[in-house]
Image (cartoon, rainbow over all chains, first blue to last red; front, side, top):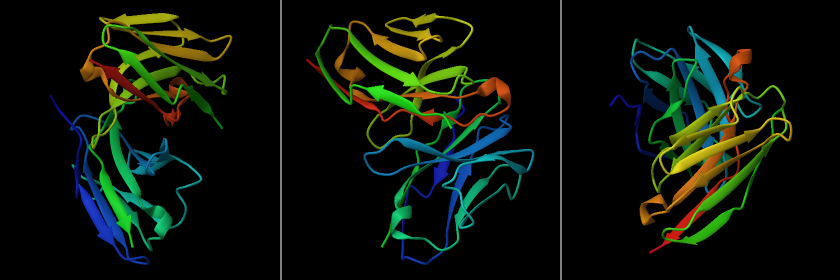
Length: 112
Length: 114
């Protein structure tokens, strides 16, 4: 069964550093998403991406965040200057636009 | 924007009993309501979803009901098994308006006691 994959599984960084989280969506999907889940809290939407541009974003997704599809398979989330409060589990998801979103296993980001 | 409330936050049942989790939503534009199961250390996995043109959907031991007028939807798990133990999230989305962002509830930790 096709699945969304994410790397790394755990990323530790110093405050102020840039991090890039990587995702490989399901191959025939056209919509890509990033969500985050702070420990013990609900899953929150960050951004959706379609046709090489952002289609929706939340208030969380400020200028410190950016997304990119650098090639035909990868989808990345970049945080330019990490803050302590960016520590969370980040989930990538993909969909065909009409049906369910499939989630990856997540990347745990720890900002020290 | 959309706000999804979910309760209870924790639910403990005996194996074989039924479990019910309830959610309410605020945005009348929401028309797609998935339920996700999240096991420890994993991403959310869809277990069932319902669209606003139906009131009920069933898949083996799992069923979901939707009341559009009252803006609430519920997950029903019958004949619970220990492997049903996980955190369950409801979500809502205005999927057919061109927006696809999921707004999640706060989650219910279900514990099935053998």
